[in-house]
Length: 258
Image (cartoon, rainbow, N blue to C red):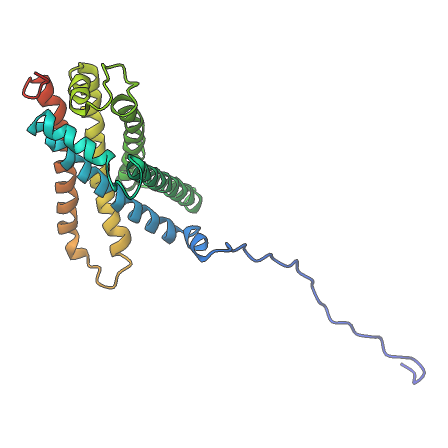
């Protein structure tokens, strides 16, 4: 190379990589938490506790059926008069119903979203058939029992709240309407089967709540699992068993209008 020749210009070998867009974050922290699997599990647990409270107190209130028409109709009227005169008649009852609908919607949406997330995270099924069955039986059961309970709830409201179930419906006569509905064998059988599905759903649901909330606590210990399973089983048997007794007692003639 002569003195008059210029040295070649060296340029660094720079590879330009396309920039990756940062994941979109929800404007509200609560929505951001709900987008995660942990957030959805918390929503399922909290709404599950609220719905468990509803089915329990609904069961306790319906026990007044065994006290006769006066007490049962008085209980039904009490619900319609809730918080009167602070709010107009039946307003508080409808607020509770709307709240329950919101809880149901959140519970169902969180369950569906978690199912979709789990399928995307594990596109290939478990290799061992035994492990696959053990891991998915609870999820499959929860899915179908949840659908059965939801459909039955719609029919139950049509039958005993809106008077569109086909039975002789008299507005304001809750006891008479209940007995007239359960005197029909098809309705009684559907009610019994739906509450069996509710019992299975409550058992797995209560157990899942402990798993979701307990596993995030530093005090969580697997040695408490038998206590959690015992509570879940006891609660499910209590609610389903008492509810099933209502149509059985009506069909047996123990509970009647006369």
